[in-house]
Amino acid sequence: QEQLVQSGAEVKKPGASVKVSCKTSGYTFNSHYIHWVRQAPGQGLEWMGVINPSGDTTRYHQKFQGRLTMTRDTSTSTIYMELSSLRSEDTALYYCARDWSSGDSSWWLDPWGQGTLVTVSS
Amino acid sequence: SSEVTQDPAVSVALGQTVRITCQGDSLRKYYASWYQQKPGQAPVVVIYDKNNRPSGIPDRFSGSSSGNTASLTITGAQAEDEADYYCFSRDSTGNHWVFGGGTNVTVL
Image (cartoon, rainbow over all chains, first blue to last red; front, side):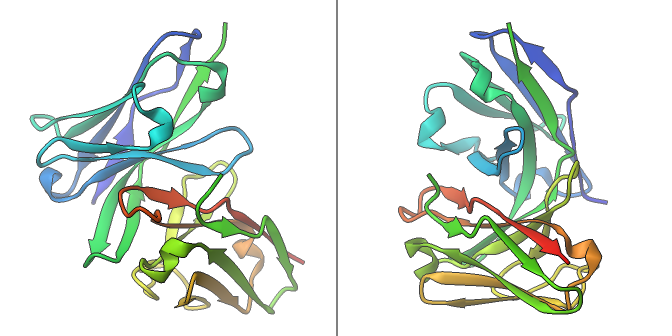
């Protein structure tokens, strides 16, 4: 079945970078965009950005411009999210999720990865 | 701040109906999808593409849209519906996406 499996938890020091992977399976890799979403402890969901695996094009939330990079490896059907210059406020659960769309007016995310906890602490 | 807004919390008596709303200018042009998140779990889509339910989602969940407001209605709420619910849509520029702040639903 269609599945997104993420890499394991990470602990990083302030100023460091983290790279989280999202391995896809069960569908044609190039056929769906992948979004990244994060959730700080006790907080809501925050959209970070999206990558088109077909053309490697990306769109990032302005909040993360300059710190966020999304890439893909077509040979392993894997998407990567790298966040640099980490600070304590980046401590969160990071999710990848597959995009679906209907025309130009409707989008949804399904399925989601299991989440990767990134802890930023000195 | 979020470009689409939700009430932080609502409560509903067991078996009664509750409506969760999501407001924003972008919703005049784009539809919202809705996600249920229970503690310690990843979000799950419950309504997508106007008013469609994925397989396995009970038909007590329904969606609607009018003007700048999208709504998720739970008709005959059950104890297992206690969760956080988020709306998701394109932002007002159309270039990015955005989640509502989430609504915590308590079933009394």
